[in-house]
Amino acid sequence: MNKILRLLLATLLSVCGVAVTTAHPASAALASGTVLTSTAATLPAELSALATGKRVQYVTTSITGSITTSTGLVLTPKTGKKNKVVAWAHGTTGLAYQCAPSINQSVFWNEARIAVAELLSRGWTVTATDYPGLGTAGPHPYLIGNPEARAIIDSVKAARNLDSALSTQYVIDGHSQGGQGALFASQIAPSYDGNLVLKGTSAIAPVSNTDVLVPLIPGTEGQGYLVMALYGLNAVDPSVQPLTILAAPAKAKLGVLTTGCLNEILAAYQNLTASQLVVGGTVPNSVLAKFAQYDNPAQTAPSAPILIVQGTDDEAVPYFITADYLIPQLQAYSQPVQFEVIPGATHDTSVILSADLVADWIATRFS
Image 1 (spheres, rainbow, N blue to C red):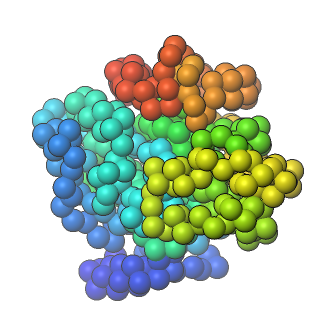
Image 2: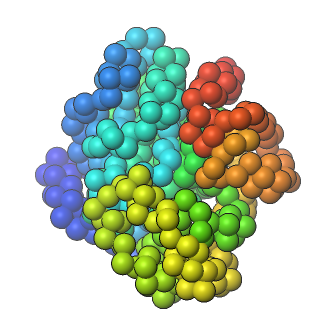
C-alpha cells in the first residue's frame, strides 16, 4: 500500500472506528495485518529493560469479514532475539477505549507483565493485541471468540510486516478472555492465518462453556463480567438487548461501562442481588444459547497442540468449568491436550505461578 493511501485509510478508520465496512472480505491492498500506524511505546518498567516496544494500529476483520482495526503492542527483545513470535492475549480489562493495555498501563495487569517478561526473556518477539474497540472507536465485542481470534492472529501478521526477519512460526498464549480467544484462534488458524504456522496454543483459565458459567454469576461479586458480556453479545447480535435483560438497579449503573475499566465495573455491580442485576434474577435461556453460540470455544477442532492451565481456587472461571467441561471437549479432537492444574491458584496467580511452565512448553513447540 502506498504511503498516501495508508495515511488516508488510517485517518478514516481513526475517525470512524470500526468505521470501514464492506460487502467483501479485506482486499489484497488492505490485507489483514496491514500496519496503519506505528509509534514508539512506553512500556511498563518490568518490560522496558527487556524489550523495545511499538504501538501499532493494524487491519483486522470483524465477525462478518468486513474491515476493521485493532491496536496493540509489538515487543522486540533487546538481547537474544530468536525471530519467533508469541501472541499474548490479555484478560478482561473493560469495554471502553481507555481500557486498552497499549495506552493504559493501569490495565496492563501485573500477572500479564510477569508472563510477557518471561516470554521476552526467552528471546521471542511478543505481540499483544488490544482487541477491536479497546484503543479504537466502536463497540468492543467482549468474549466474542471469532473477532478476538482474528485480532490475535493479525497482530502476528502486523509484527512480521514490521520485521521481515521474523519466522512464520508462532504460538499463542492467553489468559481468561485471552485464553478463550487463543482457543478460538487455534480453530480458525488454518483458514485465516495465511502462510503463518501455528505451533501451539496456551490458555490459562480460559473462559468457556458460558451457558453453564453465566447462570452462576447473578448475586456474586463477579456480576460486572455478565454486564460486559451482554454488551459484547449486543455488539455482534442486536437481537440481544441488554436493557431488556438487566434490572433497573443494574441499568442505573451502566455509565461505568464507558467511564471505567474492569475494577470500576466490578465494584459498581458487586453488591447487587441477583434480582437487582437481571430481571427475575436469571438470564433467559434464549440468551444463554447466544452465549454458547458466540463465546464457547471447542465447537470445532483446534489446529495445534494445546496447553490448558487452571488454578483450583479460581474465583472467575471455576475449576470445574475447565476440568469437567472444557478438557473433555478438547480431548475429543485429535490435537494433544496437556492439562496443568495449579493447587490453590486464583484466576490471576495462575498466570504468575505458571509463567515458567508455559514458557518451557512454548520452547518445546518451537524446537
